[in-house]
Amino acid sequence: MRAAQIDPSAAAPPRSRFKRLFERQVPRVSPAERLPAAPAGGEKDELSEPSSLCLDGMVRSFLEDGVGGGGGERGAAARCCNCFHAGDTSDDEDGPASADAAAADIAETIKGLVHCASLRERNLLADVSTQVERHRASGARKRDLLRLLAESLRAAGHDAAVCLSRWDKSSSHLAGEHAYLDVLLPAGSDRAERERVLVDVDFRSAFEVARPTKAYRAVLQRLPSVFVGREDRLRLLVAAAADAARASLKKRGLHLPPWRKPEYMRAKWLSPYDRETPPPPPPPLPQPQQPEASTGELAGDGEGGAPSA
Image 1 (cartoon, one colour):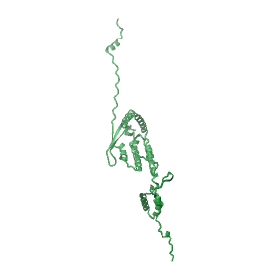
Image 2 (spheres, one colour; image 1 turned 90 degrees about the vertical axis):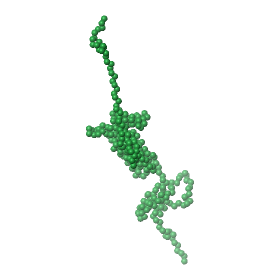
Image 3 (cartoon, rainbow, N blue to C red; image 1 turned 135 degrees about the horizontal axis):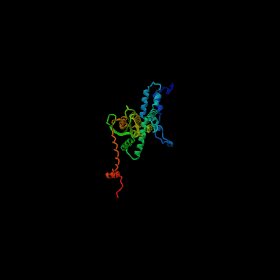
Image 4 (tube, one colour; image 1 turned 30 degrees about the vertical axis):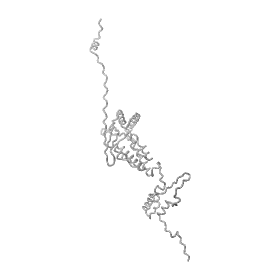
């Protein structure tokens, strides 16, 4: 009796959905094809073999979606790691669209905060910028620059002085100190208090980080080199810039240093401070005295007689 032929395709068990997903993401490669071959025409192979971490991520994605889920295959394929794209990343592509949108929002926020809030602040900024440029051209360093700037502003009629803030070490930041200027503007009315305006001549450099992303470089360009403004505006500006710096370092896989944490940055300008007492103005120069006439000259002038023969 002739045995009936068995169709092997009918006896083969149906492939699972995960197996179909795996075969679609990782095509079968024969051992001969796994051997490295010389690239033709100088072109490199754009595909790279996925690592075990990629496969483990695919398994977790498939199990999280559920075997009976309707969109499991599409969800797992959408979350496939970048190893299937040979890990190609460039400096210009700093991350997904959501990260770029967040960086753009921070840049716009900083753009609105850098402008002076009043006409008096704008006039003070103009005076500060002129004096800073003049003293830097003469070769003044940071501490000497602050002292010379305070003297120039006092000569122009401003109540300016050098301030030195100090803060102790805490669980969130290190100890340190920072020097800047403040200017006490006259009160707007009889009942109002004098307005304290902070002046920092190296504001932008305080937020520089290693290997900044393209988005953070745009944020740095928004920051002013010389800051003139009140504490409330500076607090918001520091918070936005510190968050952008943290996102840039995280994108580069770098550790956030303690001196770039938001708490440390705020402590530079918002900690208790000592305000140097401005030196008293020099006394006025004495006026030259006129020589007094002698008694004989006064008497001779009074007689008015003719000389004797």
